[in-house]
Length: 174
Image (cartoon, rainbow, N blue to C red):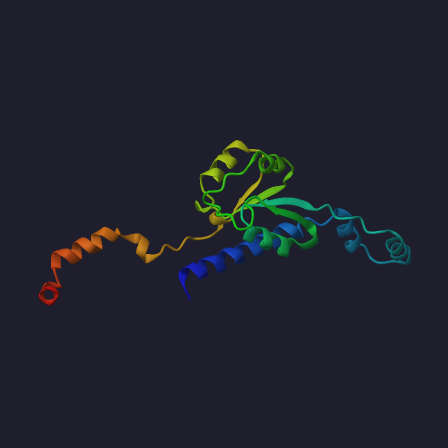
């Protein structure tokens, strides 16, 4: 398996765990109290006649359509989630418009990949919206750097030129 795939798999697992933990704490106190009571004829009759209160949905935003789908699939009926970046648009160069920025004021939280994936627009968004809750998934994982990124590509070529291993093959080129 490639390291990139493993990184994405790790990210999705962490997101899943976070959402399960976050959503388990969203149950109402009334439901919690009812589950702790011993069932009696009176409480059974009361519970049967009461209608369940509708659980208030969390209004969430996610920076990418993929994160939006994950949050929606994990949160189910308890969340209402929209992507800041439209489908088919590269998040690196995206610039949110005034309408998108205005919709953020109603959000309970914003999920982001982090690690510089979204680009400078997200950094500015976070700096200008200190009152919003940002869930940076990149902070929750240990980044695995690709071996290719650990050294300068040009050093390899310089070293190759110093050894001049292909001198014998140069005769064939003439």
